[in-house]
Length: 457
Image 1 (tube, rainbow, N blue to C red):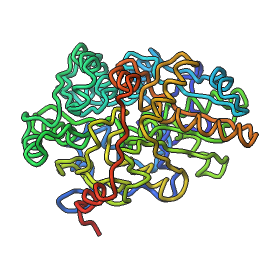
Image 2 (image 1 turned 60 degrees about the vertical axis):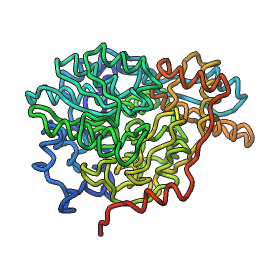
Image 3 (image 1 turned 90 degrees about the vertical axis):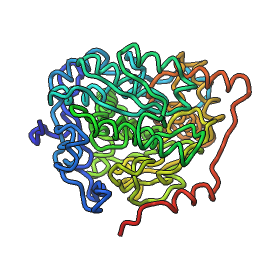
């Protein structure tokens, strides 16, 4: 239930377990633009969203004034399985780099799903069960979200239908099998099982798929099957809300030990990890209580922040979902099949897009061979094989630490280590065998996709 009685700075119970999610939008002067009905181009109402999302999640999606929303006991009890997650100082990496910088990372890979995605998956499954639904549908790219949701649905005895981006379905069979082990059905997307999937295949024969394609199929199945709703692992306001537990814990731990980060770095695909990590720190910045530098790191092969357009766009390739105002490459944009580093969504969270547009954070894009070099360097000295997505943040954290070595500045760097890469070994194999290449979309590629943006005044 929403609560306005929880004061700022009191995020945690005894034992460091967050008792409320922090809604960053409550502190934003310029609120994110509302979702639009694709038919009327008017802001979507709760009634219009209810056939797609669970009722409680609709309320969270639309709430931009309540700063704290209490975490139900059932979710908090589940969180205790793996939360609070570790905040680690990378002493060995600092030594290897010979940098005066202090490097910290918030590690979200210490749960069965192997990533931060479980923080929102269990919340969304809980609300679906509470509403009395039969099951949920979703999409997944690299597979972390599908794995997390499969686990959450098995916990609450819900059916789970996952549409997995075809290239990831083929490259990451072991993560697919984890989902099936938890009871989920997994379909490579685009597929012949939905009308929108058939349409996409007809327009793009042989396509390796994208998150936008998979979203279209999952939404179609949810809306055509009574007792089902669609759930999403990133982008939406509700997901960033749930992921705020990451930043809350990091903020509290650093405060407890008298540490203040100068810069906070996160990988950016749809925005869930980055939004969750920066939430309480950004809140302080928005309220004028402290200042930080925020850096979003995205792949050069899917650069929605750094090369996208700030405009209303469909969240899915099939153009059946609501319109969101975001930095986007166009809903028809499909990343190169050789891109193995995740973060494949064509757009960015509306909340983060607004903050980026207002100058509160900056973004950089990096090529995947450099990302895997950083992943290898980190693994060899810190003992964790990082997820490719997380390794985008590692790459820039190392770059910033090297700058400190050159200038002599003793900056404190915090980055998000979103998960482990033990199911990403096909990508690591390609890197180790020298078969990994970089593909960067041309201006013409992006322009062709941007030209298809919906016309919204």
